[in-house]
Length: 179
Image (cartoon, rainbow, N blue to C red; front, side, top):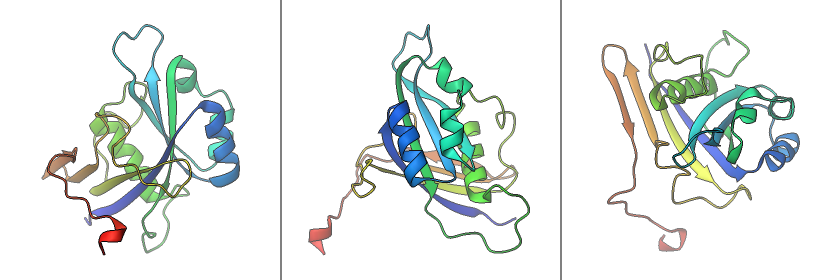
């Protein structure tokens, strides 16, 4: 089976109200990641839930159960698929790249508020590359939003396993003015 590469462009952080406004104006479908603390959580805020929706505005504004469980330090990140589409006939309504990215994050990050897609890895091999941007949609963030959120998830299939990578050490950056 072919390894499907997916680039996910994450934008944020947003408060709940800011995320709803952004979803209303700038997004149709996509992923959303919730970072925060549950009511009795003692440690610092962490990634808690990832979701996929074909209508982010409706999903975020209709009393989402996971959002309601994160009473403290809630930050939302909204994402879109930055990869070209996968050729061939669509087998389901959901974008397969976004579906696989959600599944890979859920399974390999072991997000506590996700209850689906946690028992087994994705059905297809997938390479997920996360990129983070500020809410102006133009300024790239140099650091990931949370140390537990990987830059790369490379799942080659059950027979080969996966590599989950958190980049950041020994990084050489090339700025546009260097060209």
